[in-house]
Length: 341
Image (tube, one colour):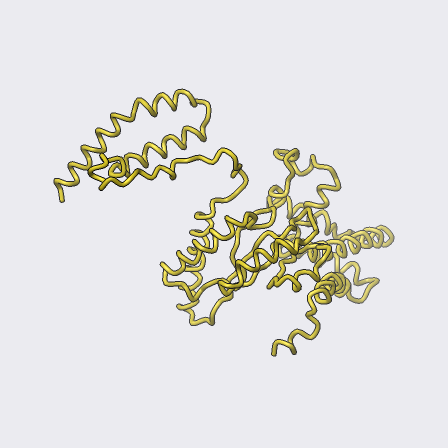
């Protein structure tokens, strides 16, 4: 009623006046700490929004005030981590949009893959992993999307762009959590992993490989580019300059910046060590293979090399296939189409 709302507004105004000087003292004390000031502002706003929680005991039926939401864990550094609830909300929003479009277009069921998109390899902490799954199920159920439960959940299993050992023990722990939900565990980074055969042995349902296959393609094209330079020098032709064009496309994409080490932050690409520039270009190439300048330079490269080699593209494809074959063997995927039929 209007009277109740008026009383509540009076309570809020009184609380704002009563607490103002306390917050002002704290804000003055931490004036140089932007994060602390932001937190204090959020706490004050929450106190005013939840003013009934601070009513006298008689008005709360004697129930104690639960102030745990204001606690700050000083022992855990979350500076480099994503908020699990935020990740869940984004995931549910994307699934809801995809499901609406799928229904509109009359398309078959989608096998969703979910997780975080962190450079160091996805979901890491067991508690966060469990919280992610619990919140995801809750939110999908609330949205009427229980039937869109993901097929794969991407998780940290010991590997990232700079480490190559798959951790079987971690995988088994996470698999035991995921399997009862009806989903399968999938490794974020499997590139150049030392022990790929352990994936199936520990119950993993999938493995993401990207940079390794891109590296195989990159290396093959780099070899062709070197041959092109020698060929054109002999024949007085204009070389395709493929690697130069590819590197520039990676630089223009800005993808390379997310892989910079702490001591490289803020530096221009051209100022980095040559070995690092090559690694960044190689790793980021998979995002720009279809960029128009890269496609045009690739056509020129193939046209030049075709003067001395029948099918330069087949050479590149074979290089990638050899890299894939390693995982076909480790995951026992030979003749998989027949097995799955």
